[in-house]
Length: 139
Image: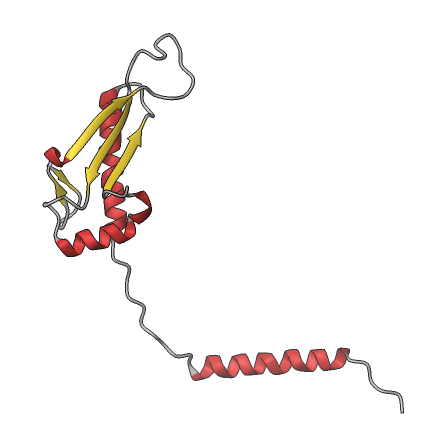
């Protein structure tokens, strides 16, 4: 079981791991080991998440989901499958934490009387400065 927060916990049987050959420059073991890890998790078919949380995650992770609702996380930083697998799980947890975070609702406020007066005073000063720059007509 992978715990993200109090609303989100994913059973490991919902996660599907596949191992692929890593890209990039190699060495003696190039094209021999499948060290890249791809983690697939179907958000739409997941039964471990509440519907309202699932809807919010779907909105936030829309660009990262496939047409079938799968979230794909890839890692190939380390040389070992085990470390890349753990890195994929960490990336998934981080993505879900960021997507599930609710921003604070902004309260509408009005400008204070003092701030209005300061703004108008500043406008009058600017206006006077610009008036001094204008050419005066010769009569």
